[in-house]
Length: 486
Image (tube, rainbow, N blue to C red; front, side):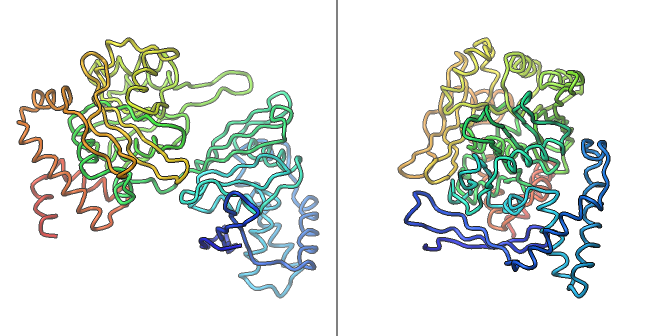
């Protein structure tokens, strides 16, 4: 095997080494996980400790099924594990004690070796297909990789699914063989059990990025150009509604977050999501809202439509929606646009033209006459072979409800280039602001200079970017003078 890349991190107190290797017997790269080896004799003692845990830790039905008691149960397990380790290893060092404790917590109360993968910030997805195949991962740099981890029993995969379900107050059984859950870490989990998944039980974990991809990270990674980012900022400043489209895992929500960094601090923002993924700077007047599934009796559910309708009663200036999926949601959002609210939402579509088609056709069926309320359509693109993400198109919706592409990504040059002249966005901006075309270009150059300065200074923190953008709105000239001197 040839090592392509290697790095290390900690999972709790366990040092984990990762190597990305090329194996001539495999058609994909291998993601090899290594931890400090535990001797066979020590493993026997640790297994004995696990057996004793069952007798030592007494739990009631409520302790196991109530997700609110999760931390209490984990702490109870941890204390007992520490006590038993000290009993069997009286001369153990603090470092080894921490290592064994984390190791046993992973095996007894967690997802075993999968817990190690959860701590790798380079991974976007962790996938268990069945007990015959290795666990797969999606690496942000190398794409899909096979790991050296195999869960050898279907029962173990089902146990992990049930464990995840209990953490969120849900169950997965033959009667309810599908599980869709969001962990308290923000990670999204989907699980299926046989016979629904005919090859075996499955678990798919989409990892939540604790550190959002900010606009400067997008620029550093050439996902979009400075002129593109400045144009988007211009649209946000003057309250243009935006639809962000793209395929699965193309980076739609990440771009939605980055767009939100341009919001002014004196406006009220309401975000509506199924799963908490939107992250905005702390300087903003922001109220995040989440849907809720009904309980086992079918009551207490709160839908996206419920929240969108409710948000309109909260005097929002801007509304952010994780994803438009249903006709009623789309209708309500477009009514919001026509009543003076700026709306920012994502949609599954691969081009500006396809976005229009998706909106006007079933299941969304938005009346075509309402589409010009959209100020800008942003299309995200991911190259499945390389994993590279780019802004593919920026378009405006014209008065006849067609898409006019302003900027288009050129794959051969790996650049986004100017396409057509604006026939709606820029002329309307001139009318609404009183600025001439020359003044708008000066404004765009100022924004480009600020963005370039932030990239030059490697300012990637969400709140720091928010502070600079807030300063732009409150003291533009002072900010421009400052960056000119620094």
